[in-house]
Length: 139
Length: 127
Ligand code: HEM
Image (cartoon, rainbow over all chains, first blue to last red; front, top):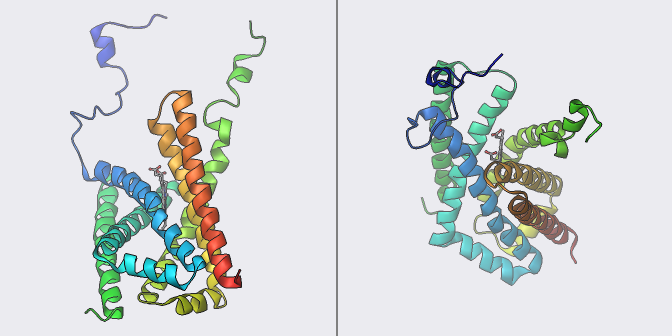
């Protein structure tokens, strides 16, 4: 048995992994990389969680400053980003868990659940901020 | 000359080095736990908008809150640690660089997790 190294043999070889410069983006691949990006963003964002909780442990003054900072325009921008990142990663994470159970691999299903992930994460982000602004008396 | 069979030489290498299957399971279980926990946490944070220190302490001291906070912190930082490990293993090549970044990731998640736990415990039980 000899290995076929002719151009024809190379052509018949198994496909290589996608070549990023010529790879046509599809909803499935974009959503997939977004899951990872949002996971990394959320991980970095835990710095704000640690700051907030530590400030509470530190005392009333530190906690007051932390609350003020999180309520500032910059704090709100961070929180808005984290809200979307969380809901996106959560919704797509649930999609992942179904895949792990072997459910939902057909292409039409992949598209449909992908759209559900995008719509529900945008919707939940909007809902969260409407409720938050109502609660804060801004709306 | 290695006298071990090819199978014996391969065993324990690759993902199995760091417990591939149990790593996978732990990642799924914390993902599952995080769904209700993070939804609870978002609602809690909204209810704490504009809260002063006293209100925050009162909230942490409510029965159930501390337990849920501890569960959330543990699942969150465990999941993040395992997740970031996979990311590092995927993108950082070369043993030395990989090890360095992995140690930084571990440090980040362990310090963050432990600092968060200590903070909520201190708020709940005073100092
Ligand atoms: C709220 C519920 C959450 C669910 C259901 C969830 C689910 C998942 C799942 C299933 C994976 C594995 C993806 C894969 O196999 O490729 C994953 C990866 C990851 N998660 Fe989460 N997650 C959640 C929350 C979080 C949070 C709050 C953070 C960070 C603070 C986080 C950070 C990460 C990271 C860094 C990864 C690795 C990314 C990757 O390998 O592509 N996750 N998550």
